[in-house]
Image (cartoon, rainbow, N blue to C red; front, top):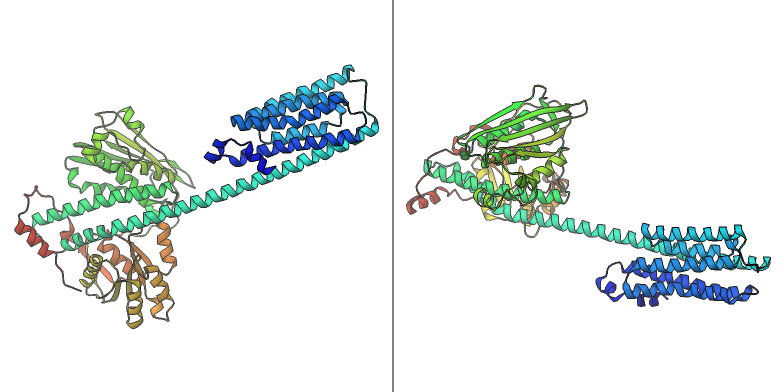
Length: 618
């Protein structure tokens, strides 16, 4: 019978591969109902005396009715039409049979109801409404027939009634057992499909994360070389024109890194891998640092900046300062981008102040080009900008505001915009923060754009397979008086640790042969003191879950590429637990100078610039 069921399933259903299991379950159930009627016929004729031709004909009709439904499925593929037809015919035949054999007290009622209930398990609400109404009318007909006394005068004997009930109950039990089997089978298949779908989703998510990690590594590694060399070049003596060129290189690299971070952040948000942190921070510091950062850019000439705070704004809160800074940078950056002359205002208000939380409202207002209602309609959609001309004139990935919307949502708030063409724009967003968990630490100065000196010399092993990054790391550390040794892969790093003695290891994560985490596990398995050497991971993989995994595998700290000198030196101080590197003040050479546009350099100037980039071999 199971093989026969495939005969009634339309060819297109097999070809498309959709709901084949459901079609098969419905057809098999129809065939079982027909088989139960076929079993009922010989039992009824054999054990019940005086079975009439009408009764036998009704039972034959009950055998044929499910087969008719199965053929409807084969011809039309319409499960609803097949089930309604089979059940309506069953209601008619069953009510006539019950009328002829005792009305509402007929022994056929259990068999009749069980088959209808069995087929009803596959129906939707509309189907159940139709069949329920039909069954109600059939029972009303039987009740009225019994009340007014129009039942047939020929009644079955008590013994025949008992035999009929036994036969009907047995076939009904068979239908119920089959129904339970079908439902259980369907539930198992649903669980299996759900489990497979979940496994496939997890695999796809893992593959996506791995792809993002790989792309991040492949893009950030050369970008580390560009920005790292620019930093080293900035520490040399340069002319004003050369420093202007250098500032352009660093600014272009920064824009490229910003777009890369936007793409990675959006992908992580979409896959649910981006989580907000809970850190104590000074709210005003984040706002002022963001605005100050934008004020230092050349394109802000002709613009004025204002910041307003409500009087009840708390000094410190607990939330995610990095994500708040990212949203503010994006909105203030957009305001700068689309405002040639005028004013940009940032306003912060505490609109809710409870014992358990704060609700802050931020407003970023500009006097720029503004937008129409139509343009605002798709503003927060990914990869979209105001129009195509904006993309050509102003650039950008079109992801910034989409990321802002999702980040604000992760921080428990909402974002909106008010604007009119030619009258500027106001972006409004809210975030939830908690009260401080710990007292705020003293303010620390920016670690970048500073000069450093080392209080003592360190023996440092650098494990890095990229020659350019080897040179950058080596020059950064050797210029401070540290002894540096290079390893080109994890296997060589392990061999050098076995033979030598080091205060610190700076380890790349992705290396040929033995990777950074694998080399770390081997080193951690050595005898002390080698097993306790601090290891700093230097990686282009920025996924938070991967960074946590590196730490779990024994790496003490992580610096992500492209890194700044100050970031690396502060990480060294952290893992060694002492102030090895101390700041000697702001490095003016690292500050880009605002100068008039320079003429294009000639070949001699370019050659001189390249010579200045040379550094001692390590």
